Length: 296
Image (cartoon, rainbow, N blue to C red; front, side):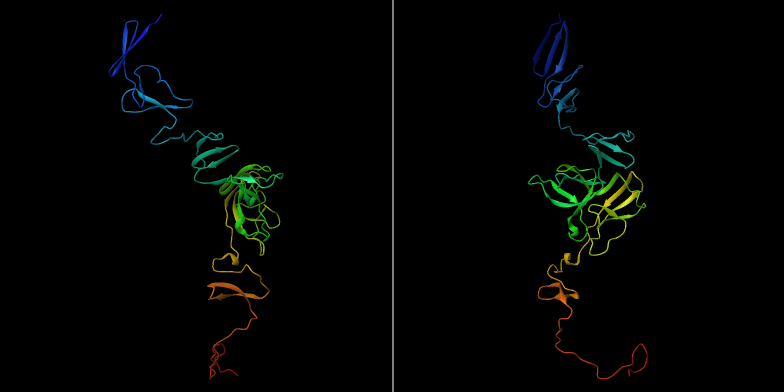
């Protein structure tokens, strides 16, 4: 039978086992010092053991380690699981796993959104618009973008990065690449606009007014499993300009004129008489520049 006797004297703890004595420094307020095989007691599941001072064998458990730098394996080439971060050599950045998609840090911006429909799935690669919020949760609701002019351009939000089931959450990309969508119908380098005839769809042909002209993405690779780069512009209507007030009634033939009293541009009937304080007409006829001779 092994008998261990522990004796603490001032700054040391003596452990005597079958006649052999081992001297161990005392336990400090910030960690446990050991000079033999083993780890300090305590800690919680998934805590890390770190060196807590310059003293030999001084270590402690922590759930919030501090490091000067974190080095990733640049050649691992692994796919991150949900919540994992790895280095992606092809994209030259860190890749964050988010379920069945990835977020390439510093190169993409995506937002977790709620499908505004309770029953209809929004497919991956669909242009979507702002459709409200989910109560006080902070979750944004989205629906396929309507670009026929019945909605203002500023409600456009982004492009879905994954299918979003009815009344469920999914990621919407507002900047960056979306991979794994069918782009075979477009040429590489083509600019994709919101399709006025198909809610949520794209067209490579610039729409005509009064349809919205919303360039939202560029085709990077043209194939069944292609890639687009989302970089959208909501465009502007004349009435959306800061110094224009044209949200009221408008009629055929109206023109924009300056209202000095209101300090803004407004639509005006072009047939409205214009009042002049005076109008000076020439008293002599000068040669016409176009003909170089006097007028008849």
